[in-house]
Length: 449
Image 1 (cartoon, rainbow, N blue to C red):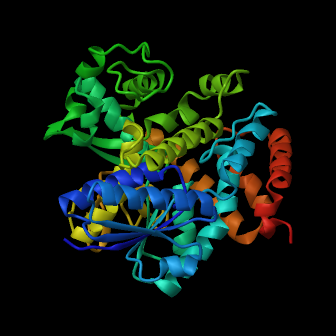
Image 2 (image 1 turned 90 degrees about the vertical axis):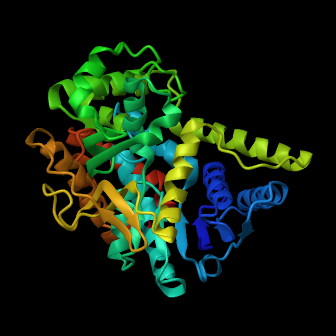
């Protein structure tokens, strides 16, 4: 089994709990034993904490892994076999603005959809282009495994910048796997047994095939749903091992009744098909924005890491079930490519006919067989006519956003926002965009030349 050099850009992120846990698992099993992990971040305090934790845990648990950090990006990339990208330009404070400024106008702004997704991409894409160019200089054969959002747009920008060995990941597909596990009445910790072949654009995919241990779950889906409580007893959206369906999962089952498919990303289907319910939730006075929740979670994780280091009990473990899935997907892709495992993984890649309803150069999210040559997309079939329009809108939304980020054309920013069904009022979206531009001016020099 090969040892590899992995450079993690954004290595001070609290998501390192999930990445390190998966690295530890593969190192113990031999798949990535002896690998070197180089962390890079613009926040030295955070990246040093994560590096110290990794080093202390490796010593204490006798893990065949080496951890270091490097503040200079070019040196961090030197000799890398894999580059894992998980940074957020502007941090959670910028995401908070993406969420709250549209809310003032009763619009929604989320990290990857609607006008919030547009501005997240506008900030991140110039950094991604610089990263792709640096990879071409320092480690041209490295695979860029992208976890930076919006992942389809970031991958598009990296590939346009000339780094073809780019693939994007999103753990949204785990939503349909968790749902399938609940319908089958097996623990969600066994959701990895579910094979989901999705097709579409990131955060608007449909699950074209769904299997569990050789069984076609769609052949039995009506019976599974009939035998399940669809009242959403588990609450609105929690994923906590509760065997009951939450509201979002129940709504996905309602969609199945009409479309005969489950959404490939259960969590994000609501932005297209349960918009008023979602809008009412987000506009409620007591709503906690995701950025605020993530900031609290990050503080909680770092506090626990500091306590471990002080007590001399450092040991790598994911924070929870969702955290574990996040890491297993990213590090699992690295392990699969490094070892030619040829397992199924959902990835964002250049279409090249995998989804016949979209252009060949579109960045699509599909099931891929992971090989030493990279992801090989699996053509699971054409999207039904009933969903093609919305998926096409998602593709246009992403493409226009990348075009805007690369050109600094404000006209394209409005066109991109209006391509998303969250925005249909020109008078309002003009005001939202103008305010977001002013709020993020320091990260958007291409629009202020």
